[in-house]
Image (tube, rainbow, N blue to C red; front, side, top):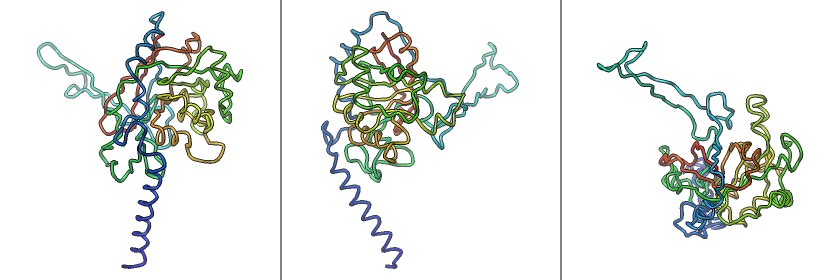
Length: 312
């Protein structure tokens, strides 16, 4: 065996050992060694009934932002839609009743726009939720474990925390890290106590930058750091997120790459909801509501475009 071959084998063995060691740090999951849905296990019929009881006015709020080719997206991602009229070029109609139709072809990343990031999306050194190693479940045609199609409908209580009001600025400054004290202060002001099974969203005003300063929107953002992430996880939440593209302060204060997402998804099975438009909820002071999400079941994907609905 050549020196180069020895080095390759050694690196592979080291990677396997490293992966196994990492997996042992947070696996098996408290929901079981075979679990693939993480914190979604916390949503019970009682949670759903309690959330439904919040509906008093019947008003519903779409929480997604419209997606087109101009929407800023993370690094390599893009979105393109093409309208196709098969056999109808130039306005040709089909059949004796002059039938016509529009058909759309989308070439885009599932991580553009408002999205659900599943627990198979973020890993640590190729180790994902419940100790699953990439070599065992990641293929070019999608993941064979932890896919979005495994996630049940997320129907539970949603809570939005108005950080814009807390900091007293139209847009929360990009270097702002939300501490536990900040979160508790907003919860107290809004008269809310977090419950097990909640979806927790943060309103930062950051969506106002889209179309005005896309560069800034993608390069930096305010959000929770590790202290707040650990506290939120201890409350037993199902998902966290808000109106930014990463749902955590970026860049992190310690120079780590997405430490909150690693902790929440890989270690705790807590979902991330990105680019959630909470502006109308905040205007109506609808700080708690019935949260409803039935995501597209693209088999093998770890993230997907969604349009959650809030009902109050």
